[in-house]
Image (cartoon, rainbow, N blue to C red; front, side):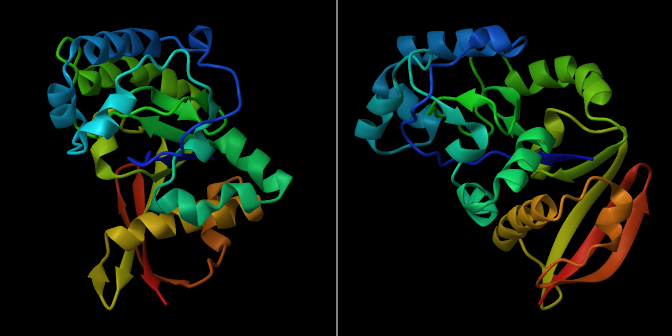
Length: 238
């Protein structure tokens, strides 16, 4: 069972591991090349709009080549709500290994990353497009066959819906919706997606059968909906 996760806009700075090794990437080389060209040729004002940042000093920080920056694991680089809930650095080595081997993170720049793929600090706002390369279209056209083969027969899809533009699984898929007081939550959904990953890793859940029999802390089952290859599990936050 592979777990698909969305990235986060916020990222931890720095790192103490070697710079990006593009020889380990295939499709992403083209995107990184176009990204570097765009960043180097754009003004700070243009980048402010593209990054979605009003702070021009912060924009200057990102107007640089990412190929020479130090790196860290992708699962440690991202610092959004879901990743704060996972608390990767506080997990046992066994749980960390589970995440390294089974969590796939979608990236606006890199397409898809294993949780332990080494990446630098970068800025690429969700929905932003490079002038000479539509990354949404590029990854949708080039990732499908590769991921269908590599992800196997069971996929836990915890991504935001936006990332269906990059890849929509054809294998048997489970997704989750979270309710609070009878209403679907959005911000808290990110937190509980991270909670699911943490609890799954701690309990070494490797297949749908074990997942369906597992009782998550602070969540109770409301309903299971099925449509084509997707099973949506609706949970109430308690």
